[in-house]
Length: 259
Image (cartoon, rainbow, N blue to C red):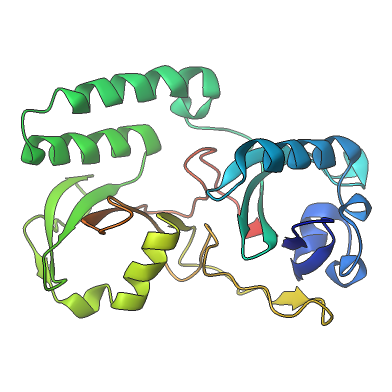
């Protein structure tokens, strides 16, 4: 969903909002955030906006105004072009072992230490894909490097035995065209939860105009996650795949997204 940056009025919402909140999307368009979220969620969102600016996604738990009838959800929030985008996903019943915050922080610290010890970029690339796969549980992680003509090569890979190998393969510049590279510069982390999905329309308040999704973190089409390795020059990207649907690595969720 999208909210106006200043007064946090709702200008767009996905048609499946009712599944997450018990509130019909058409009923909230043009209204204030208070008709959808409980007071604690509104306070957390305002604090996050004031503290972080949300030029990159920030994360928070959300509860809807319908109360205990709908449990807390996970939400990624970010600001773009005068709007605050909220991407909501159902909180998973079970997380992978490293997903809890008390274990993730030391695990990340250890991973960074091992990467800092790499003696050259080749070793660093191998360590990077290994650590990403260990932390996220994806079935394949590859590091894809761009060359000056924007052709690319898979220079590092960590994968399950069941996944075909891409290491050493070269790809034409059209594999990741200019418009896609531009999106990575603006939003270096993007996730596509599932190849088995049902498209959900985005309802927009006519008085507010269109709400673009170019900076959305959750996408559709195929099950993968990718991150730009260098935001300004786009040195390359790391990309991951899983054999089943999932949402954000932070929560290791497996349900569909809404917002």
